[in-house]
Image (cartoon, rainbow, N blue to C red):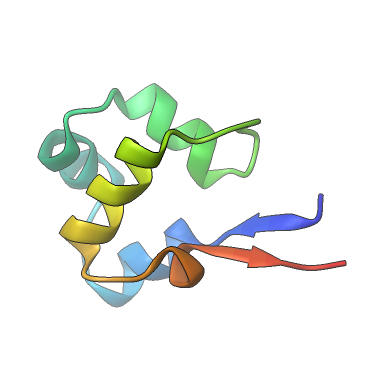
Length: 67
């Protein structure tokens, strides 16, 4: 996979659980878990925006391209 999701690193840095993030952005824990493990095929901009707002990050902090 060329796009790496760094959600786990961001959560760890901010001492936040996946459950807490799911509640704060109003998304199911299952869907957020799929994103965290890198198994998601797509992400809505509204979800990306909500994650970035809560975690205080930029989209580039969350997603990384690795050839």
